[in-house]
Image (cartoon, rainbow, N blue to C red):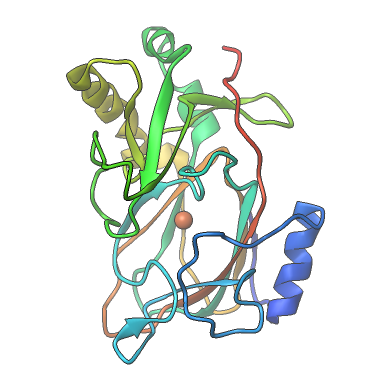
Length: 244
Ligand SMILES: [Fe+2]
């Protein structure tokens, strides 16, 4: 991940920067339900608790958000996410970034054996932000996708653990109790300070991260304070299982 402090970026600047990483690829988030508040509404999303007429103008408005990967619920998860801080609360609303390459490196051989050849179901219901994923979601009402439990970074081949408490429902083809227990074991990374960088936002921060090998989460923040970040995404690709 990259952090640039003290930036003064227009929306067009941010999109040009996304192009550097995306090679001109489509940057829009196809499921974005935000109001059309900007000229770049399809390509720039707002992550904010600002409301107009009681309705959030962006997405992911309030409070804590569990660890997840952006776009794990589509077949071609995003290559990268760019977040630019326009307004931040006095306290809280930090973003935690977990290094999922090192999370994989830390797994013992027995656990790695259990993950080999395994695929997980990921979904996002746009409702729950701080609740562990349901093991058996109603797939007629959510967006979902399946990915290997250990993915290979498409450019380097490096293995990354690819499970998250917010969006990973279950291991496919595994007994339900066994799947839930294994996920609980793997989610220990969310408590492992050695793997996590906590970004305390300042206005003007631009943060860019590798969304294939980095999981992220948000800490709680006061409901009466404004938090406004602009997000753009870089189109990704299907992820295959790492060799390990
Ligand atoms: Fe996210």
